[in-house]
Image 1 (cartoon, rainbow, N blue to C red):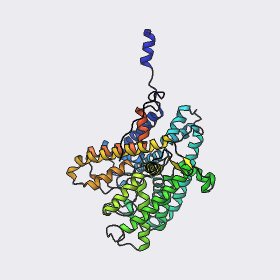
Image 2: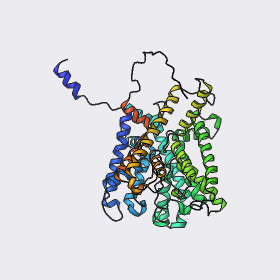
Image 3: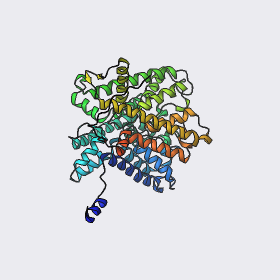
Image 4: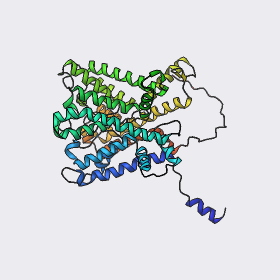
Length: 461
């Protein structure tokens, strides 16, 4: 090899894979957001925000989580700060690559093959064709649903809070559909109140619940539903599994919370039967990826906290604005369990045989997610020892951060620097996805596929 070729070899630019671009893209948006949120102009008191707190807030917004180290969003952030927060939430909800593609289209810039590959990975698509059209449709669907949510929330918020209700309706609509959980209700409803002031308002509860559900379905499911006009039999297998699993989880949580919290004076005990039905329905929907609450999470019974953790861990669906291990992952894991008990290699769903790639992916997501949450819990048990936080509350907080749910039992505001960093990493990993992070370091085509090893039997169970 000549000296010139050696020099060219070492000077060659590193090739970034789609996984690297997604991770770096989200990190870049978070960094810019943290810088803007730390400025005095973002604060009502015109003061600098600490570097760690600004990064935590930006990470929470871009990851569409909703956890906050400040007591109340509306009380601390100025109008400028709230606008920055809303833009970060929108970026996190639809994906930075989707908005980047939109700007490139407006500027008539060429969208390269690599751009399409990044979008394919970001939206969890099997094929790379039609990515630009998909990005455009995602933006149109997002604006249409958020606009409808804004109109539905406008009347109740304006009746309660006057002209300020217009900004609240817009902010809550975007935050709900993006499954973010940030709110600006503190200045009118009480600091840190979230939506508890509207616990008995049917319009607010049902509108926000619908926005959360639609955001949690995933854009491909929403477009599939629109294309087939709600004809269930014509939907794809993915859409069917998402709808069935989501429906079962909502119904299961609704019944459970209604029974578990019926006589609990700290949550629903003093409500009417209708109010309890409404509050338990909202409590069943919100944990799946949104941090809104109409009852005090710290006041929940231990059984209800466990159910909330379970719903947070499952989360929303692939390609959605929410987090968690995803509804389809749960379904595939249950089917794998049934196939294992039957000692069969064929795993079927809806007259379709699932691929080995789907089952392996589901197991990988489950194991990596559990390891991340348990490791984070272990660290926080030591770092937050002085705060007097219980194991139950720490576990709740770690699951909430990783699944980008955003519900809290009140621990976030008193976290140490180590605790904040751990939860920031959890939120980032939960939004970007463990598979994407894994693909940064492991090639899909690693190893020699022609090598065949002899089978080995391992005793299980």
